View 1: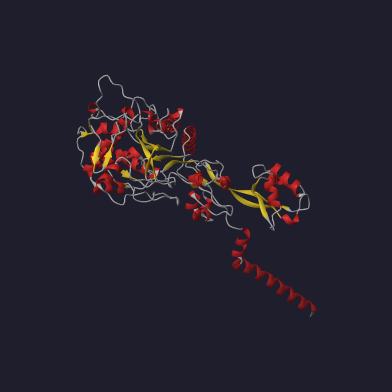
View 2: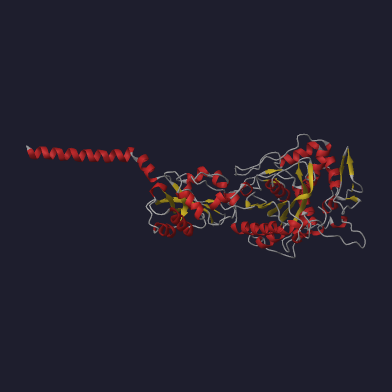
Length: 547
């Protein structure tokens, strides 16, 4: 009887244990997942697979101030000696004497640092194993990538735009490939940053875009910040000037106005001339050409762009009219925020009333303000055959690019490629030429808008370019906000002297990397336009002067 009862108790115990195991297998999975914690945040790489953002195992160093046993001044000094990049002795002393139960001292500590701090021998200093977001390229592409808060919340950039995908256990297991090319990004940051520093500018922006897909190959906003140490950055560093800042971009709008005139059939003959002999008076408003470099004669279409005439451009825009000019700007998405994945996007400043003078001034980039990204997409459409593509920071697989929408006729695009090339060969864009790469583009220098009017001595300088013009593949934009007159720009703050050389150097450094082989024996055919160009007998033009 006793053996039978013992056997029954044993069977009952086994049954209870087995039942408990089955219950845990079925009902206990969420609890197990909670114990293990969320899946690591997915990695972000550039278009070639180079890591831009990774999740790594790291250590955090914290302190329980009320548990410290030793002399706090001495402890603070030893911590400062081991972590000088975090703070000095007074800072650490303030942390370890706080009237709080616990506070972090370093959320991104290496194993070697943890070992050294542990050797201090203070029981109040504790260590915690956790995951950390690391940006191995430091400041590179910081505004495109964005950053996380100390609590791990996505705050900006593609980190924020792709937050759901990066935190999904399944999707996050595969790295997200951006359209950014680290090599091109580094070149643009280097060249634009050096020029901005030399010219003591307030800010700058740079873009390299695939003209046929809308992929952003490089996105640079200056000043930069380090997403690994985002707490050290201020408002100006965190602002993305490519998508969050709007500017009146000056004469870079003139090719857009000319494209509208050609596309709508307002201008059909490149030899047609427009009066630029004297300033144009409209009501109480007077339109001048660049002071000291006025042509003071009738200009045909190529000459209007080569000499960057406000007067002739305004006359052409007046013929296009308000309805058609607005229609073209809307086709190019100038009336709403940039079409890109980022959340940080500014709305353009669109004129509330399109008077006759508004049509004229917007044609040369005054009275309407857009982001540099808007301008890049517009130039891509102008040179790629007339198709506008939404810009994207995600890599597009070959053959998968969206169809886009047609905004210009193929014939208009072909003509604009010729005209943009002539501007670099014979006009204000000469300093933007990169030997062998057949660059076309337009300079633009606009006075900075301020309360009550414009600051006459403060400029926003922009050079919008594309290459190679015989078969355009890439658009390159460089913009500088408020450069000073220094020796580096020959004491000129116009785009020809500030940002056109930057674009030239970027193209020379990256063209071959992007698959464009330099060739001095190739070029776009502009032979039908060359006879239209007039040069004063015995007069040598000053290169890159007018804007």
